[in-house]
Length: 458
Image (cartoon, rainbow, N blue to C red; front, side, top):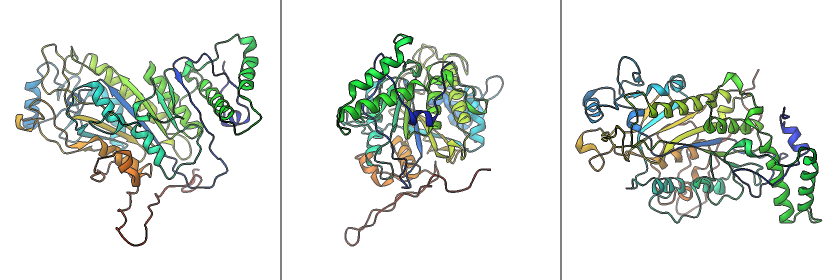
C-alpha cells in the first residue's frame, strides 16, 4: 500500500521524477516562508465550472403564479412537477430545487449554501467557446486579455506570502483559462497519473539522477530552483493519490473524475501547503436532445453527480480545528443557461440567464438571491431566454473583496466593470471607499484572522 504523505515527510525529504507524467502541466513553484509572522489571508476559493451551459430553469423553476404557468406551457415534457413523485423541493415559496439536488438541501437549510438566479455573462453570445473565454478571462467581449481573472487576483493580492509552494491548481483537465498567465499554477487531469513510470527496482536511483541533472553550484540558479522545486511538487502530487486517502466524517464522493478531483483538492487543502485557488470542471451540460422526462433522465444524472460531489466536499472539509470550511468558499458557474421553451428533441437550446451557487462556512445561505425578471414574453431576453439581472462579476467581486481581502484591486481583476456592491452572499469586510483626490493617502488593509488566533477548539 502506498505510504501516506505527511507535511513533515514532505518538508524533510522530497524526491521524485519529472518524467512520464500523464495529463500534467507543471512549471516553477516556490516555497512559502514558514517563519513569517505576517497576517496573511488564508482563505481558499474553489471555482466549479459546468461546461456546456446548464439548464438553470430546471435547476430552480418557479413554483407558482403566472411564471409557473408559462414554465409549464413552455416545457410540456421537461417541466419538473411541484407535487408527487420527483417533485421540486420548496426553497422559499417562489422557487423549487430540482430533486436531484436534494443532497444539498440540508446545507441550504443550514445557511451554508446560497443560490443566485437570473445571473451570468451579459455579453450577447450563445457560443460556448466565446462565453467561456469571456467569463474566465473576466473581460466580456474581449478575447485578447493575456491573463485570467484568478491570475490577476493572485498577482495583485496584498495579503499573500511572496512565495507559496502551491498557490493554484486546475483539476479535471488542462489549465483553466481563469489561471492563464500564472506560471506556478499546476494543472492535472487525473491525480493518479502523477507517477514515475519506471522499473520499481530502480525508482530511487531514477529520482536521484533527475535531481542531479538540475543541481548547480549556484543555489540561486534559475534552472536549479525551477527544476528542484518542480520535482518537490511532483512528489507532493504523486503522493496525494485519492486511493490512499480517507475522507472525514464519512463523506462519500461520487465515482468518476469529478469526485476524484474534488477529493484530491480536499486532501491538498488539509495538507496546508499554501493552496489559495483551485478550479475544477464538470462537463456534459449541452442538452440539446432528450434531457429526460420531468425530473428523470440524463439531466437528473448530471445534477445528482454535482450535488453528491459538493455535499461530500463540504462534509469532508467540515473537520479540522477550526473547520477547513471556515476559510473555504466554493462557487459554481456555467457559461449560460438554456432557452425557456423545450425544442422538438425534448431538449433545450443555448440561452442566456443562469443560476450560480455559493457554498462555504462564511456564506449567508438559505436564500435565493438576485432580482427575478419574470418569464412573460416582454420580460424575456431577446424574446426567448431568461434575462440577466446580476452580472456574474458582481458575485465573484464580493467573494474576492469580503473573503479574499482583495477588494481594492477589483478594477484590475475585472477591468471595465463597475462593481455595484455586495449582494450579501458572504461575510467579511468590504473595501474602503476610494481616497479623495487630494490630501493624505488612505490605505485599505483587509481584516483577516491570523493563524492561531480566535476561538480555541476544545
